[in-house]
Length: 291
Image (cartoon, rainbow, N blue to C red):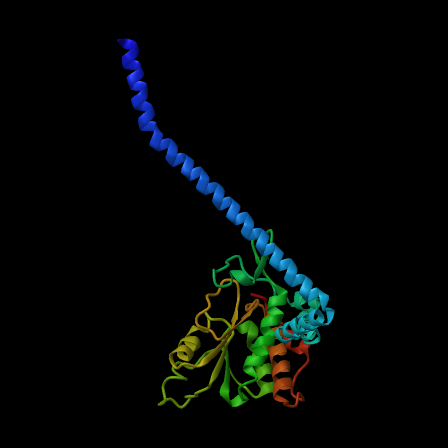
């Protein structure tokens, strides 16, 4: 009895598995047919490609024409770059306005122990005594840009503010050479905002020696929407200035050098006679104590 029952069970299982086996076989057959069809397609494709290639290569003149046409199209797409102009521009940037030694002698690159986030990008390194050292190349580059910017305005449209004593001498010499109006010692309150004042003056450009000490003039300039060129040290915050000259704006020699280079460049750009321009030594000959 047990054997007959087992036989019946096996028959049932075999019957149940028959459709599954059939399905799997059909899948295998389909997969094989797909592979065969793919192989046939690839063979046909390769055969067609070889035939086309043979046809094209059989006639070399046709192939050469096609290649020439492709080369012509590529030439039209490629822009011709004048490397000579690029080289000239790079050389100009590398050329300093004065020798590096002259910059170093005046201490134009020496900042303070305080470095604000605004001025961090201009700082090259810190000395052992924590003094921030400004990048001389950037100083030179920004003086050049300042000259270009200032030269857009006539002397009557510019005002220079210098309340710091160490810069008075250089500021006066700058005004004498360029004809720009200069205010040293004390800035007349409301000069640019109060039309009722006898001292009222409405410039288009204001040059500020120190944004902190000359803050009254800076505030008036910003209120009235004037353009601002700012000399900024490592401890200064840049307030909406149109152009920054990173430099030591506390030392007399440093300020003298900045104003000498600005005056010289301004006269050259505006094609004004430099008869009244004093020498660089006269600008940096500050007798007082360096701040």
